[in-house]
Image 1 (cartoon, rainbow, N blue to C red):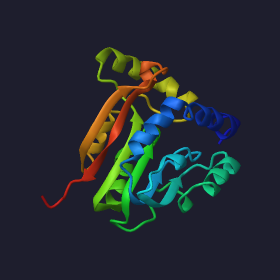
Image 2: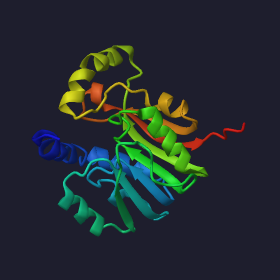
Image 3: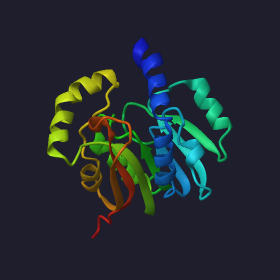
Image 4: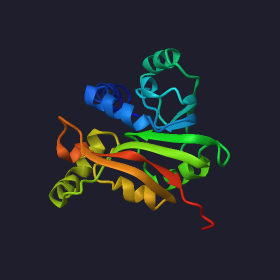
Length: 210
């Protein structure tokens, strides 16, 4: 991991994802979370202040360790118990099946290398009646914007440390054994459309026996 990805990019990410418009969307998205929650892609802990009272505890998982002092300070000030774990390169979550009431990802699916495997793991550890809650940016429904996303994606992956602009979030979730129960598509204010096409919603597991 180089100087840029370890020290510079995490600060850019923390600053940009702390904007008022993003905080508002976190509040809306995380209203769906409840019970024992697993958050994948914890980052710098920006979701902590937005979890509702229905959440009783949080397991915060991430393969990276960014801005450690800032993260630890946010965990200390959290209103719920937080367990921070480091994910290894295998991609398998270190939890039994049907473990969590909710699983949360925010601005995470864009940068996971093996997205299908990751969504399969989310499905595995989520209880049958549980909720998968997501707030993600991704592919535009406008063909012209989507073509621009495809063009700029190789550059984006370099400057944003693996982040993809052009993933069809709802399709990927649906193809991984989920039913998307609610979905809002919108543009994040003040953000160029190639990076600001948003997916906010929740999904439930589809019974594989059906």
